Length: 164
Image 1 (cartoon, rainbow, N blue to C red):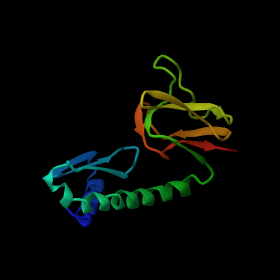
Image 2: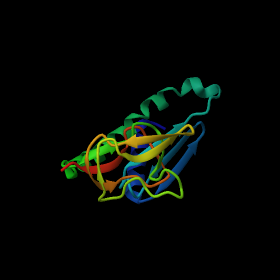
Image 3: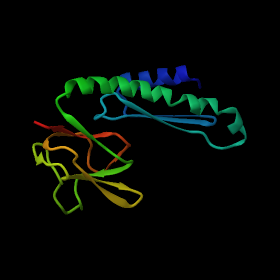
Image 4: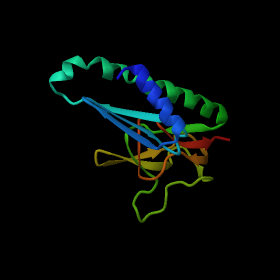
């Protein structure tokens, strides 16, 4: 499967409204997930098993990163235009996002809450370590962009803050 076929598959899945598509062919496995929150943004995960044919396949994984980056950048540009007046708090690490310090405790922040620099906004669990994410700005929480107990990537937007 070449890069053009993968890009066409991404476009087809985005237009179809399917939430997840898995495709397995010989030594290539592709999963395309679209979430309701991502509004058409696609994520591709590919795994190539290490077998005798591994020497023949290095071009396919090397070409893959170009496909998901282009749609992601296109979808982020309109978001930036809509929220120019807001500051985006992004995840500093990969892990699982939690809005509460413990299941029986209240959330750190709610939409509309005023925050100061240094206030804890959430916790991200990475390798069984719970990392408190502190605000680097003062302002008011406008929107929480991630669901509780969801996996997050490095530099993924978590909150929108109105600094005024």
